[in-house]
Length: 547
Image (cartoon, rainbow, N blue to C red):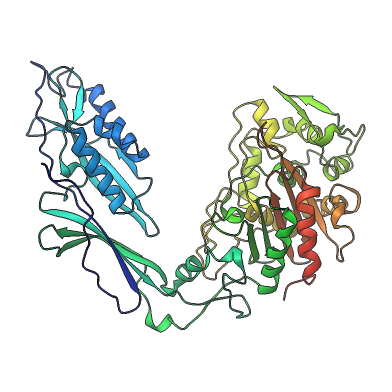
């Protein structure tokens, strides 16, 4: 009976500062089945202008199946399906690898001494909770007697050092992360601030505290279990001097508590909220509902809907294509490849651009699309608002995307924050702060982050016009839900279509004093009706200006 790949227990060593958990993976040597070339043919025999396309197709298909977790299918493309499936399963499961990325290389394909066609590939293996192990290997392909190609199975194709005598073992070491505090030194713990619970480890490690998960993939001798070499290491080495030194964030405990409470207004729907300082981009609060799992506030990808009209208005005002008092009619419907309409099919005949903004008239904004070049909206978003540039805020983020529209219909959609325009509450809070101050500041949750962004300030006249439009939206428009609050609040609502099977997402962005806020409620139907009460609750519970 052949030896079967198995997980073997490793020696458990207790680290000086933490608990070590060990997983091991054992795989055995599979004897490659031969297979000969069809008479007179080799891998480069068809014109000598490159490898046989059928061989390359098989190589890429094998890698695609392996990467997607279709291990029976991947194994079926090899000369020894049974052994291949066992080894691939043992390798990925035993090393806690999830969603590998395997890319075949076009350069370096050659006929090896054993008559196989060697196809190089790059393996990027994400080890759960630690990081990505990247290495290079080669796929041997052999032409079969009956025609076609198969991966000539052997252990070394999985990794060049995997063999009959050596295997890999994953070792994990957890170290206690430093404490995390708010901007005033108040301790931030997951029990009191649930939305921060998934982020505290990252905040501690990312701020240089050296806490969080650590580990290594080690090559070990099968017989003795001794480590031969370390293939990959993950995590920072703990700094003993920093063990008792808390990591201070830009967050404000009072604002964070108010944000967590405000999301109770979402009535159980998925929702998120970000509040940040206008003058420097420091994040005061970041909250998600549900609080566990995905950080949709900073990493979500949503169509921003009509809140994006802040950016569209900026693009139009920058080139003097429209003024707030210009008449821009707002009909119920406008067809640009497809029929666009306003929320509740409202209409405002003879409306000014100011009225179009405050009532969030889609058809009016779409009618102005000819005033902008195809890529102009994305250029303005990037140049003035930093959207689509790479942000470093102290935690993982999605930084937005505004692609050049593929056609006139998509251009129409992008004018109102639909189509392929993507953002999240962090981005839209930053957009709001930039619009009312004229200057983009890369948001931050921790100090000392690298800033690679390059932007230009908005002209004072444009800033003044945007502030006026947003203020009118509160006093006379769709953001009246905030009108009873103290302070000179400006805002913009948004309703974003998702699909025919789902209700629209509801958005609201606002600013008061030195703070900008953005909230989204998935399937909230309207911005004022769903995100409005959340922002109202937050601003009711905090000072008009942060300390």
